[in-house]
Length: 146
Image (cartoon, rainbow, N blue to C red):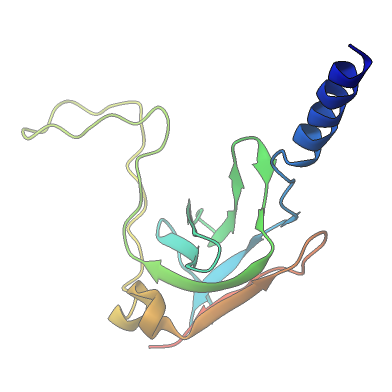
């Protein structure tokens, strides 16, 4: 009986050590500009094939963004390729546009985005990268060129 308890206790200790490990994360925020002018309403994507992570954020009216997911701030530490493309995802509280225009709604129309050069739409061609470190990171700012 004593041996059975010892084996059970050993099993619990081993199982506790084999659980999911906490992945170190770092805050990721910054600003995107085109010729020093804010890029509003576009989408920025950080992707790392090595980590199996691809995360998107919508740029605000001043071109700023910040990543937060599942209640955790930032992204897992690692190297990322970055892309920026015109357009954005719907935001909470927005309605799907109808085919026929209706009376003015209380929801303001999103600002039109700046024309972003096509090369920035794909991580492979953008030339933009970010090395996210666990803990503090400086701002990841990108000034796009035509």
